[in-house]
Image (cartoon, rainbow, N blue to C red):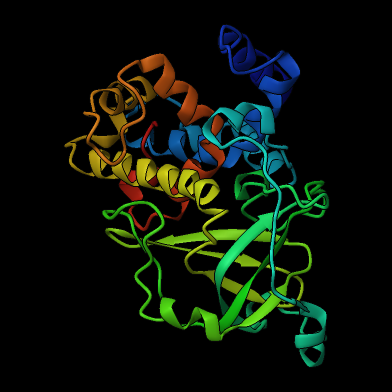
Length: 310
């Protein structure tokens, strides 16, 4: 039977013509990082196999790929997504910000992530150690001890009101009724962000970040940081539009990646998920923002979507 190394080599060769990867090593890293997703997509096809065919679920190399991905971290290349973000800028604030460690000092001994305090963050921005504004996409959407991207944040902290962003509205529009109350929040400087997550409904998205001390649901960002957040919301909007397209199809498992790219490239310029009419440009966007898109697929509560060949 084929080994994991042979499987990776074969997949890398088949993708070697892609302009989005610099070599075989980066291709293999990309495949491993999406191993669990690939495994789930393939086992979804088991129901379509002939009686004598071996099920994907039982192929050792695929099982090994799935397990390898659980201990693998792929660094998102900032250069690959740079074209979708504004030119470099640096965080500025006229407020005196309290250190997060001072505010949550009494809760610092909480070790269970789920039990950490939860708050809302308004008028916020994210930046690196040089205060350069930076995208959430550079941070993995799950805890990982090997993360080498350090992102900090600042904003005005209030009680969590459960609000999110309407994806059918313009970028940056929050559903929160407390947006006007953000000025009453506590100006806070966060410690390093460890992970972020996206939760969503039919037309809303809820994005949260976590430090070692607390969870923060993100409200409306600062005016300066809004262009960086707009790209994240745009990618979420694209992912959900793809999910809706797949849900409308009679046989999701037979739709390919190329089918999805073709559909997205047919969006008109006034479509909120429009990228380009050029399939190559659409493919580039979907690939380089793939971590976030695949995470939304993995979280979607519909087996048909999770098992789609996309």
